[in-house]
Length: 127
Image 1 (cartoon, rainbow, N blue to C red):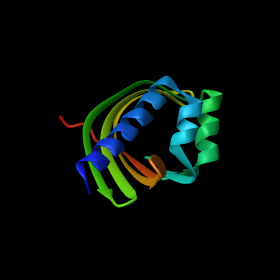
Image 2: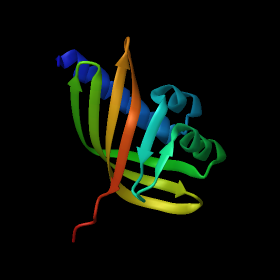
Image 3: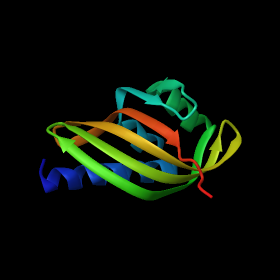
């Protein structure tokens, strides 16, 4: 793992978060592998088609994507980003304002990184 690879994957993660914030369907489509699977905080697994449909329909919209913490690892053509985000917006028409921890598994093909798997968990609020 080289510093250049870590920087490149970190930039891909930042690009992904920015695309979420802007609800940029084309950018999200390009950053998600066609066979990606997401395990959400609700325990349900969805595929790319379901995720993209939620973004397109407006049932999943983020008005705030604020990174609180990040860790990046690269192993040859596989990368892992672990981020804690403060997210605000709407999910299925319901308001969202929470901290979530995500682990994303990325695959590098040529110079491009794409997300092949992701898992999100709600971070419990501490008193």
